[in-house]
Length: 562
Image 1 (cartoon, rainbow, N blue to C red):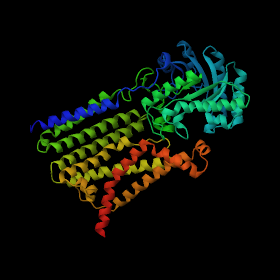
Image 2: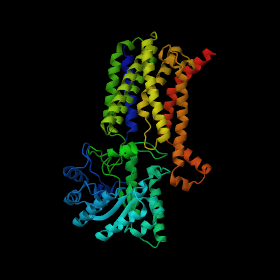
Image 3: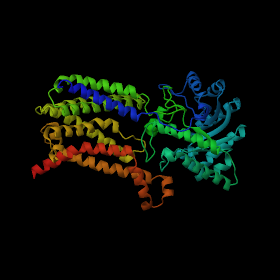
Image 4: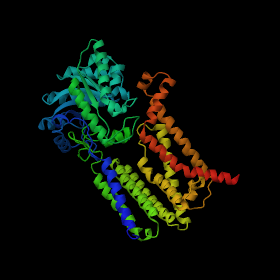
């Protein structure tokens, strides 16, 4: 029985791990299938890493993939993408051709000339035209200049002409309704000033469309409405109750298509492919709105159930393989400890292995340039080293080995590095966090490490007290640093600053202010959005766990000095 306890622990942990992974990644019902598996229209921008503008063969490859997924594509510019219409004709795909406008009048002039020429050369492919995209939202030009460009294109082409912007811009500048042939509005529930959960997203879209329609009718205009952009990110930062995920993205698109069918909406989904360049402007969420990855792999199916992570068996195998290597390294040593302690050691090692595999997969998937990949490799390496130190400390505590000052010093150094990085990320999130993700995955190993050390010390001492939480006690070291209290204070202030910053970001939104005028009227809603954010709460938990040992150290040292 003595020699069977380790194999039994291994089998038990593998079964539990596999059951959890299977249960959390079961295929889910994402709603009714997309009819014929094809979407009415998709935003299309062909891009390849290392190419400033796409080559004709890139566009050809991309449209070949999209031909069985959509009837129409919406493009955003002419210059740099001239062959698109000819290739679209080849695959039987129609186009909503866009012309890009910005603050540079000379560039706008060239773009409009190229737009008119392309539209008139491909009347069988280009069915509608959009002049400018979110120009007013970006404040790139005034309304009168924009109307001038719209009129110029309308006089030169036969197809219907519109302008595309977030829906509130049509309410702010209703004169646009008189100028366009059809009204193109962007409705993105995730990005709203008051984020809308995916379960309420289509109801929100119906309400907005009706609001815009009523505004047009009040002006004597009964014009078609195109939802020019709508979608849901599959990865990224949570906003209030709006949670990016693969399943939520599929749910949103399928439910939108159901509503569009009932209400006869005209819509365009953003977008065909993930767009890595958007990460610099809209964070990880902005780069992940596509139906396909940058490697042209489907993110989720348009029919049938959807799994959040179809590759979970691979991740399970990698994490299990890494864990078994650790178990093999400590196999003989673990025979000398009791069954509960061996089980705890192996469970903690398995948890660290799962965190490391999850971190590597997530960071690499959301790294889009050499600098981001270099950072990802650095974080993976740092977490690997810290995990190795923690595993050694877990064993020493559980085996009642003497504390090692050298190991304690290395652990303290590692934690100080992670805490300084956590402070930087926390204050960045607090003061400019709209597009920044909560880095929970990057700090899961340090946080689990603190909790694991507390459990191991409890098993050895069979008691927990205030001193047990002190970092010196957790690591087995003997340090004396006056900076511990400063770190603890900075972490505590960072928690408060993050909550205030997140709340203020909601209250500063234009539409939020219109809906909730007055500080005291809006505050409860903003706080509710803040504390509904599970990613934010998970990050606050990580900060609290990381700061607790240093807070205890600082308090103990202050007490000793007194």
